[in-house]
Image 1 (cartoon, rainbow, N blue to C red):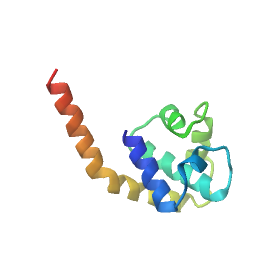
Image 2: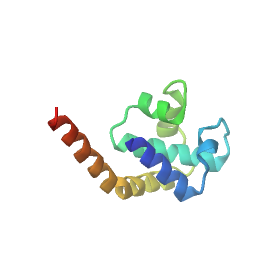
Image 3: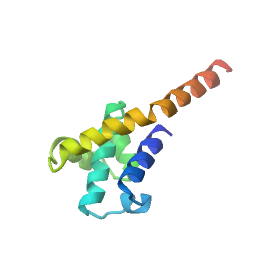
Image 4: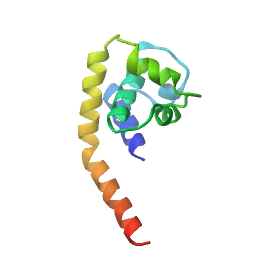
Length: 106
């Protein structure tokens, strides 16, 4: 749920189609978007394995590469990731409240 908000936010900001994002293409714009998503989800506490599942990777190694090795436009990706997390904060808060109510009702 939360990860989809981040993915949609990045896709909208970069004008990228979700199918292109999840495809195997290595076009620079798509890779930059994936890197931004990795940073944003990492800031929110998602594990590399969880991020890999969100992006359709078989394992965590491409996520690790995007977070730790790839430096091309890294600063821009980090800033956009922070902006996406801040923009999604109200949605995240509402999602947490909804989950808490669901747990309290049990």
